[in-house]
Image (cartoon, rainbow, N blue to C red; front, side, top):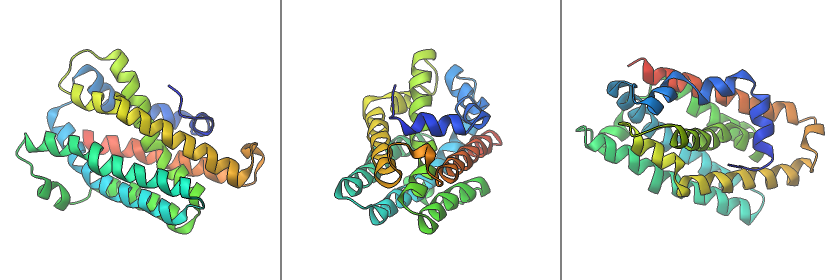
Length: 223
């Protein structure tokens, strides 16, 4: 599993927060099947709302981009989120009697508000790199989690969720996003980005979004 050269640097800069996110008790409950169903459904409803805003953030990337390749990559990610990833949420919730209209109208949890608005603000107040640094923990973190759980988990009630993020379609999205980040960093900061005065700020963006991911899992468990 490789999502480019920048992602490992940002992941290392996140410190213990990265482990707190990718090995959160919610994630381990998905792995061994012990996660309460109500917690999973609470998370899934909120994650649907999250993905609506997340798609808007990636669409914002089109306006912040400097090249057609960047625009195409952002647009492709919007497509992957709306037409592929969100289908899992709709199908799973429909089986529980929750319609897509109910999902779209769901009241946002405070943790959801905090995370999605942070990402959008990073894009509005910053540039393309600020936005990518705030977006990356979700996209690439889920890819890392899905790949690990697919290797470690047996058959569990959450096998479909695991298969979605471990699957080739989502993993290809992660590789494409990793390549997008690498090219954007080189274009704006050079091939030695860690020497740029902007580097600490970008690492902080990534670390903050990672901390908000932890809160999002915890929100699910609170159900």
